[in-house]
Length: 119
Figure 1 (cartoon, rainbow, N blue to C red):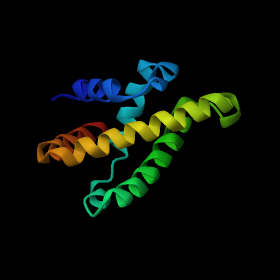
Figure 2 (figure 1 turned 90 degrees about the vertical axis):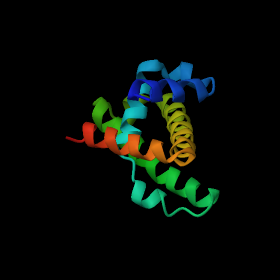
Figure 3 (figure 1 turned 135 degrees about the vertical axis):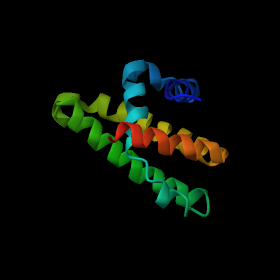
Figure 4 (figure 1 turned 30 degrees about the horizontal axis):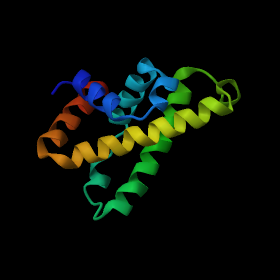
């Protein structure tokens, strides 16, 4: 699997809100999620509840990074976009947590993409 296939995997699994966000933004959010991924914390999650807590932390990091990278202030994004962004980011993180846990090879891929993006 290459990174574009991961983006497609996430896109196919997102609900209808993905259309409000748009494909480019979803792809950007997937990349930001991979860049901020913290496998050392995730690997210690013993149950789904702990995975959800981890997901909330990552979602917050991705949203802050997206706001910073976009160059827009919270006021410029608007209330509706903030809600859509929050829902889409949370869903992306949930999808990627499940994907990451599903196969050991996915963890290796995630590490490779992180090294590539964080050079």
